[in-house]
Length: 262
Image (cartoon, rainbow, N blue to C red; front, side):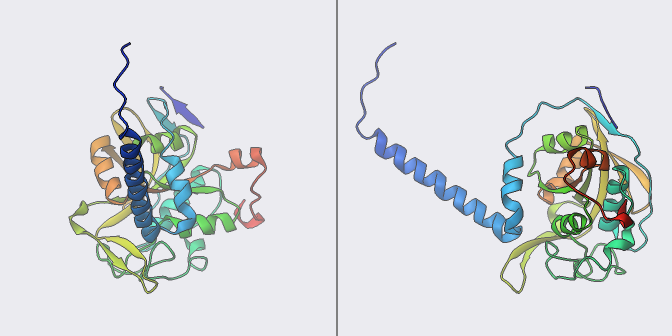
């Protein structure tokens, strides 16, 4: 359940079409270059969805708060992604645990494709690191739990849209800013970002001033002003995973969860 607050003719210029053509070509070239960068960083299957979501501008309620948010302590030093996804799914009425991800998620140096490093490693480094949103989406889908990969790229309205629609949102945050963030390439030549002291929490609400989160790192509630939250989220390109609640899923009759996860 979600609670919401809330004429003169101009001289003819024969060169104008040519200028327009050049300008259009430059715009197209810029878009190709930009999209190529995204394709190198993010698996291509998710790029159209991420771009499409930027077109939605609201308006959205002034506030929204999901019922059922709770505190949970992650069970391993680097299992915040699994724990946060578990929190989001549980808020939505799904029955999973963080341990369910262990055998379902592959290992991969590129966190867009699997878990990077040792889940028992020390937080803050990039060798033992964690996982990004895409593999979690795939695992949830295999369990019949609908979710959506998000790259908000600075658009706070996307978070508002999901929360006001009743979806808990797993968010990737750079807790110490972009100074510790850099790009590397995997064996396939795909560029991806690593960020020291990256952490993942579950957003369950917002209002005009704050974003409200459940932090599995220490099992505490977190409240961040919008500017502070966006500064941490933007370093990670607004990476998120929106988890659809079971009630909506069953109404659409699109996803059927295995008995084990109901």
